[in-house]
Length: 83
Image 1 (cartoon, helix red, strand yellow):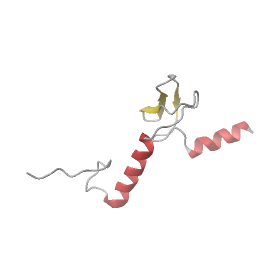
Image 2: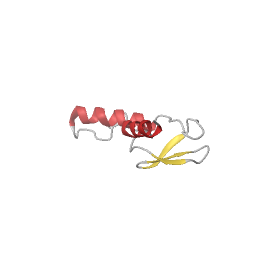
Image 3: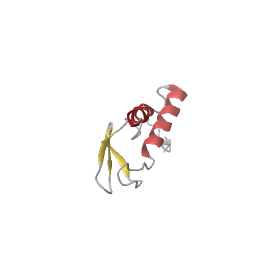
Image 4: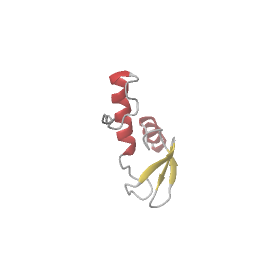
C-alpha cells in the first residue's frame, strides 16, 4: 500500500505550478498566524468569514482584508484621516 503524500499547507497538489503553490502557502501561513486585537491588544484575532475578523477574548468584530486583519491600503487611509 502506498503512503499518502504530505501537502504542507497547500491544497493545490499539481495544479497551478510552483509559483501558485508558493503564493498559496505564504498566504495561508500569514492568515493562520496570531494577530493582535485593535481593541484589547491580545493575540487572539481569528477570521470569521472573508473580510470579517473577531477577537475571541473581548468579542470585538471588525472588517479587514481577506487574509490579514489590516491591509496596506487600510493603513494608508487611516494615516490620511488622522492628519
